[in-house]
Length: 192
Image (tube, rainbow, N blue to C red; front, side, top):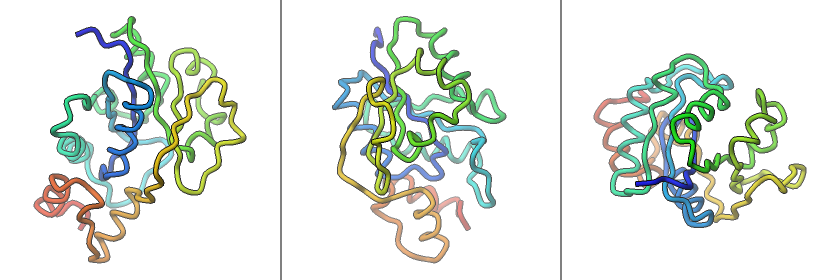
């Protein structure tokens, strides 16, 4: 099958939650993408902390989260490369492997505000179209939207941090994350 329009959705996915799935589905629909590829990062340059799930656990949770949607795929490109994740390297590798594909890089408004700080952002803008998703509490005005697609969506204020904190303090996280991921976390006692 010739992939023409692919959304790239990178993240720690520690754990993947229902807002991630809603974002991916909304991007798929609004931008009329063929697929969205979830890309778990190996070790994000901006985040390191205690009690992270291992890369293998995050990969397995992400695979479980997307089960049943044949337009969602998981790419292990960053996990295989190991080391810090730089978006440009990933996108260049994907472009080389799929020269005919148009890639859309899906980011939240919180990340969009920081885009000017990204390594080689100008090069990156030539390789992908940024698709900016509304995130609670972030305004997208300061960003030049000419080069970006802007996706409005219902505001679901769920983050992986909130899920982990709720879990660690013994609160319910069911329905915050897909059931398959919830069962996996309990089974493996991932976040203690």
